Length: 326
Image (cartoon, rainbow, N blue to C red; front, side, top):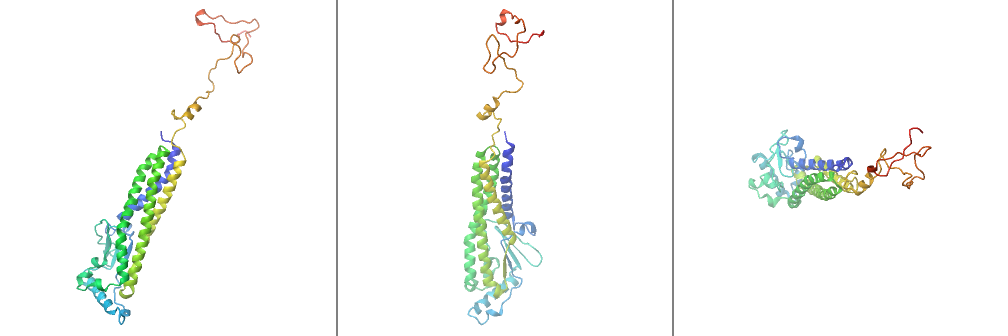
């Protein structure tokens, strides 16, 4: 039998776990629907190429020739290869569009996705060996992002799976504290995985944004910005996960799921053995002597000591009573 107090005890962690699952689903759905502002706003990074240009500061420097060649490759890619004005990067895909056609041309989602601007922008198709002319800060940041992208994907998949498992196992917590005990393990794994995923994604994309802006913003007018809504989503989900783990642990110690009226409970049996009011109890008699709880009979036999005679087949025991004439 499910205890109402037990249900109240696990309601908070169950709802918090459900909120974590919703946050993770949004992370996985982001960038998978064209022109869907509801989910496509949760991008990791946005790259703006509307102001693509060759800055005069590159001319006359040691890197002037390289900068000129790279700028020419970028401009050729934009003019002839269909490079878009905007790019948004997600966990499993990216979107690209021109002008006000927001979040258009979203690619099919795939596992272990990472955004390779050299390939996606078609820079190698311009006839210029851009790998030779790319700034070192750009290549270092891109390599670090590529190496971490698979770990980020695994961590978010693990967090999503742990949230779903925690919800399923959490149903057993409604019946006993043992259910909460096992659910706490799942919730702890969910919290750890999501903390690691949020921290890794935040750090990697901050470094990638810094590398892109340092290499491309000043000389080429390409600006990158972090997705604030994604950061809010992943860290709010992390806070929910930590809160869920704490309350699941608290439910192990509080609100036993066993009913106090369970016949299998020894304490319940001792409680039920109490005397019920208004029940009949045999009183002491002059024949058998007073009981342990009374020093004299409750009823007298009348002035003449009259006592009713009982038939022989009913035995000699009798109940004293007060005669009607008294």
